[in-house]
Image (cartoon, rainbow, N blue to C red; front, side):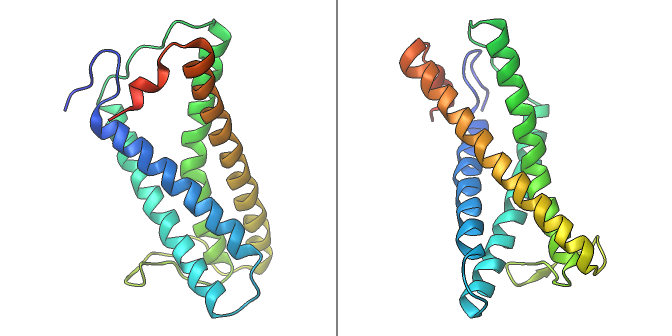
Length: 176
């Protein structure tokens, strides 16, 4: 499935929207679970949050590989500062789509909890148990997740602005 010169390919669009839904769901679950008292419900949802994070990490790897092998449509006509801002936001989004789950995985390891994907596949610990490091990683994971959420909102707001204020049909590039 090739992309037209002005649209993203169907696999790219599918990966974009899967990531968008997954990221918002994982961030929402993380926010929800952080307010729950310790108990079975919290432990279950923490595991679901970890599973979502690892799945999203795998999806961003696939998405990055796909993007590396396929030409992107050209930027729409816009002021140079907007194009630079869009490219910077996209770069930061990718950085955080990798960073947030990796920080969460490291935090879990440092806190002494293994990550077992879907309760079946134990993932390697790449950080040893270290309560002090766990606290640092917890803070970094939260900061990175909040930053990711803010960038997602900025990205969505810019797309809506292009579609409805500039009327340049930017969103048509991401439709199925």
